Image (cartoon, rainbow, N blue to C red):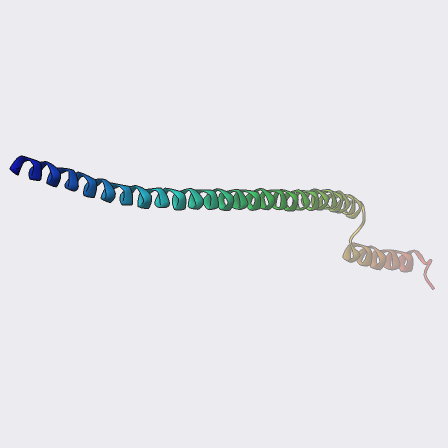
Length: 119
């Protein structure tokens, strides 16, 4: 009978361990289900962040395009101003300065007086 009791004890222990393993499997299965939900949620979040980054990239690109257009317009206007300044400089090079004109006027008056043309 001793052997029978020992065998029954062993079977009882195996059944007990089997029940414990079944509980652990249920827990593990639940944990895996939770992990699966978490991974699904993270996937959605990553996709949302990716969509937001794409939208931000498009907005940034449009902003840079607008700035580029404005800089090009500014460059055109600056070129026009520079050409205008060059034209003014060329005209000024061909114009007598005021002090020169005053001096020449004084000399003409003096010469006219000496020549008797003056009043």
